[in-house]
Structures are given as structure tokens and as C-alpha cells.
Amino acid sequence: MNIIDAHSHLWLRQDTTVNGKRILSQKNGRSIFMDQEVQMLPPFMIDGQNTAEVFLSNMDYAQVGAAVVVQEVIDGCQNEYLEQVQKHYPDRFFCMGMAWNLEDAQAVAKIGLKGIAFPGHRIQQSLLTLMPVFKMMEERGMIVSMCLADGDKQTAELREVIAECPHLKIAIGHLGMADQPTTPPWENENWRRQILLARNKNVMVESGGITWLYNPEFYPYPSAVRAIREAAELVGWDKLMWGSDYPRTITAITYRMSYDFITKSSELTVEQKSAFLGENAKRFYGFKNLPLLPYIKNMSE
Image 1 (spheres, one colour):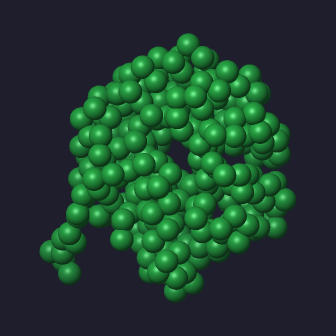
Image 2: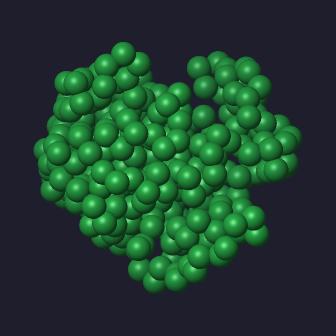
């Protein structure tokens, strides 16, 4: 089975400010996050760097052939580092840039990054102000990674973008932010509207961070499996992709655990698991030359 991670992060160092609050890498996997010290990375990542090489080691161990690297405002702009990652590991990574205007987006395309990630849930401006960027990306065959805010406002705006740019490939993140503190997402009309955007030809949905969204329930995340199945009922199994949200999620679980709750589930068919865990992402992002990664037995088995 080809396994591809459709939502991950890399950085050399976090050093930024969001809404006036500090985010800064520390030692032993910790960071100052919104002025509070948190365990951002596993404690063995002692230098605060979240590098491609460490990720590749995790990927090889977990038999994950390739990964899409998106960006988040909270990590600071990593365009320069991801340019190098894309050049050094073209068959293993599909790296997204960060840009907020046409000039910056053109610069992202020039350095060879294949898409742009928009953490819409963290921005205040209308997505429609980015229409020149979306049109440029459509013309160049670039891919949008888009996480949407709660509610229907950005969903409606993205629907307009899809109508204006019907050939633009868009991956909607975090399974539409499927966690609901009091109501299951499939009973939430705003969640359903967001997922239903994937009925458009060039729109997909990825589940980045779903183990974080259902962390209170914890492994093997039965409600996360239910949410994935409900999304598939709305748009079909060919429209969904697995994502881990590495590395933040592996402070609570191992990287392999971020997907093997799917492989071990009795509620999904082999064909559904194969499509969700890799085949859909392979087709959508155009991955080729995936490595053959044998299972390496643990010493403790």
C-alpha cells in the first residue's frame, strides 16, 4: 500500500509573532507559543529544529513514501528552507510556500515550490482579496492548501474562488476542522458545507491533525474514523486524503499511530484504506518514484 502524508510541517526555527504574541523555538522540543511554554516537538528533538532529515527517518520507519509540507503562520515563513528541501528530496516531498499577495506568490513559484498554503483560520482578510494569487496559481498549475475558519463565511468565499478558478487544484485541510465539543461534525451544517466543496472536480479534503482534533478520545480514535466515513458519504472515497500534521501530533503518539488506526479499523474496506492513505494523494499531487519501504521489525517485538 502506498502511504502519503498530505499534511505535515517542517522548519529550521520558529521565530515569529502572531497577534502580538511570541512564538520561539526553545531546547528539548519546547517552544514559546503565544507567550506560553509548550511541548511543540518530541523531547528528543533537542535543538528545536524540525528538519527534513528527521522527518524522513520517521517516514522510512513508518513506511510513508512521501509527504506534502504545508505552512502555518505560527511557524513563521519557511520558504527559504523549503526551497532547499524540495531541491534535495524531489521524490519524497511536495513543498508549499507562504504568500499573501501576487508578488510574493510569483516569488514562491520562481524558487520551485509547487503550491501555496493558506491558514485561512488564522487570517482576517477576505479570501476574495487573494483572487489574483489564485488565478496565477491556476495558470501555473500550482496547488492550494487551504484551512478554513469555523462557520460558513470562508466556505462561501472559497466557493466563489472555485467558480472563478475551476481548474485550480485545492486541498481543504483538517477534515473541515471535524472536532465539535458538543455536537458530532456530521450534525453540523457548516462542517457539511465545507466538506461538500470537494464535490467540485479539482477540490480534495485532507485529514491533517485529525488525531489532535480527537486527542481527548485518544487512540484508536473511533469518532475520527466515523468522521472520515461521514465525509466519504458526502463526497466519495476518491476525494479524501490522510494527513498527520507532523510533528506536533507526535508529542502524544508515534508517527505510525497517526495512520495505523485507519489500517487496523474494521469499519473500512481495503480499497477505502488504500485510497485514503495514499492513492488519492498520489494522483492529486502527482507523486512518482515512490520508494519501496520494507517493514523493519522492532527489537521489542
